[in-house]
Image: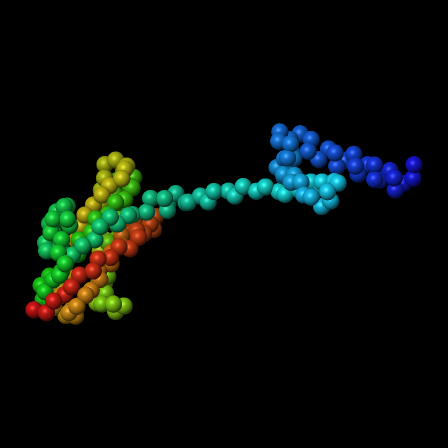
Length: 190
């Protein structure tokens, strides 16, 4: 037997073992699949197509429980939780106090958590006022907590027309920030 005939015979034997050890007749041991392709009507040659499974993207634990704003509204007065729904209004007269109320939820461990509550009031793209404050909340056990709060603004220098109040909540230890939620209201002339 000459050398060329030996190489052809060895290649034919090795190609016969390509699917050995696979539980699926179209899958090899390394996870690749054999897909027959018709290049000639008399013979079919398997084409190896590697299969890949994307790994799930893991969210870091500190981002998993970001504060979540549930509602924002202009209210006539605010003194306790529930006033956001009970005292909701659509407009305020310039010179009268504007009270922006908001409700948010946050998963916290036991102990004290430090938050920053922020409100921006905008006239279109122009900033009318920005205010923020630090709040410490204490809880006795770990869990999901909901809080409602409000900020009061002096409207003496505010323009008349439609304004937007946008609220965001930040958790300071792990630098978690909520989505921003807005409410639109009118400022009328006195």
